[in-house]
Amino acid sequence: MKTFKKYIVFIVILILLSPLGLILPDMFKAGDAWGEWSVESVKEQTGIEPAGMKKDASLYSAPVPDYNLGKEEDKLPKLSMSYIVSGLIGTGIILILTFGLYQIVLRKKTK
Image 1: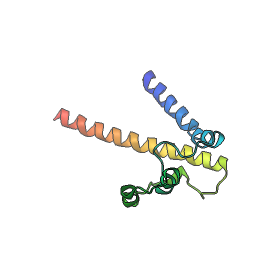
Image 2: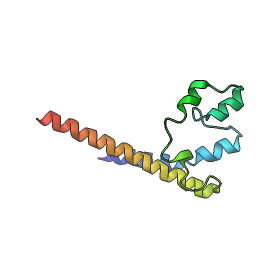
Image 3: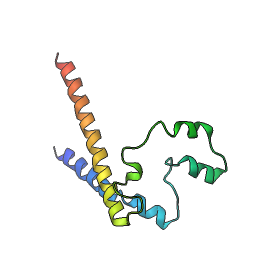
Image 4: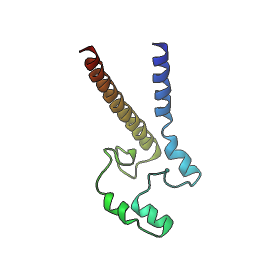
């Protein structure tokens, strides 16, 4: 049980540090996070608009776009809270799914 508590504390610390994803790229003028490019940012960086990316861009939209629960122009403290809440929501979903799958596997083993 002590190991489990250590994992929970570690995950909570990571969630609380998640606003660094807002602060550091802005501080170092780094641009978008790796792999989170939009069609527009790829076109801006490379000069071409990938046809496959443009076609598939509308297939999925994130439940919390840009990890922002408010308006896009919100200030850093409010955006930081949105990052933390998004981290909690995502972690909660993963834990629920993992626990659910574990219960299904456990039931199949006991039959």
